[in-house]
Image 1 (tube, rainbow, N blue to C red):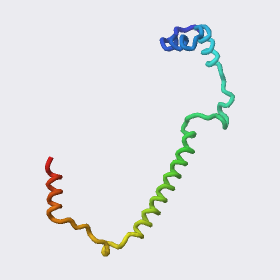
Image 2 (cartoon, helix red, strand yellow):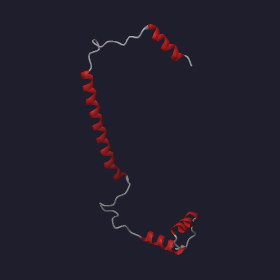
Image 3 (cartoon, rainbow, N blue to C red):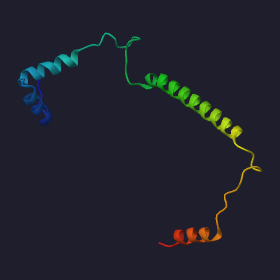
Image 4 (cartoon, rainbow, N blue to C red):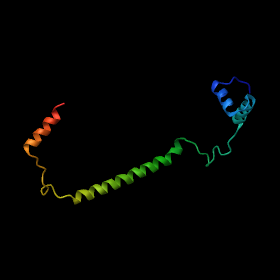
Length: 106
C-alpha cells in the first residue's frame, strides 16, 4: 500500500512512536480485517434497528411518567377545597395600586 500520508497521520505516527512502515502495515491489516460478528445477532452497531429498543423504552418511560403525574394531579385536586369555600386573596386597594405603579415604571 503506497500512498501519501496526511498531516494528521504524521502527527499520529510521531505521537505513537511508530515508523511510517509500521503505520502503513497497520492500515493494510485494518483494511483486510473481516469481523466474524458481522451479520449475526451479536453485531452491535448504531443503526436504525439498534435504536428501536431505546425508543420503545423511552416511550414506556414517558407513559409511566405521564400516568404518575396524572394520578398525583387527580389526588391534589381531590384534596383541595371547592372553589365556593376557598377564600379569595384580598389586598388593600393602595397596595394593589403601588404594585401596579412599580410594575409599570422602568
